[in-house]
Figure 1: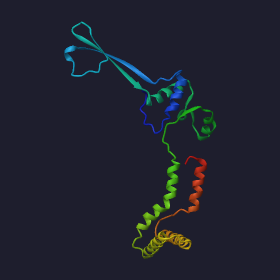
Figure 2: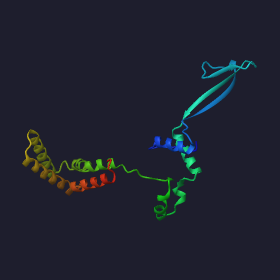
Figure 3: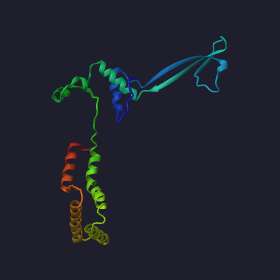
Figure 4: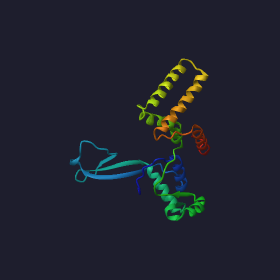
Length: 216
């Protein structure tokens, strides 16, 4: 083992395929045989011996223990060593010195290795944040304005309208509620540091994200 790795994502099936091609077969596990010779009088109350035989010399016993070690994380180390030995793996930290060189050379590389800080773009989470950003701001900033007289009146009117709509849907009342909510948002922004996102902008950003990453 050359390195201990804390893996965030490891494509085990692909790793097995690569290792099989590089090594002419897939090594699934390593078997180690450990042989010990002990005096019989020193035995503990348990053993894990597979083979146990007296040697006839001073009442000694020979123990052979077999360990089977399944490759998993070590498989990545094996693949890296094989790719490096075959000069297929390129280390970007030593191969490149500028961004222009990166753009020029990387497309011709088969396998690359990069060492340094990175960021992971979680588009699903980002989309969820966009959907709830305005509600989060309303919760945070409106709570700091609970004693503001205009906020008290506006919130009471919105609550009464929502209760009315629960008793029966009315198109005019629904449209009126939308206007009241927009005025409430405007009131919050005027009296705090809230910066509510335009709903059309949110939808356009989500369309852009889904175009780049359709699985979101």
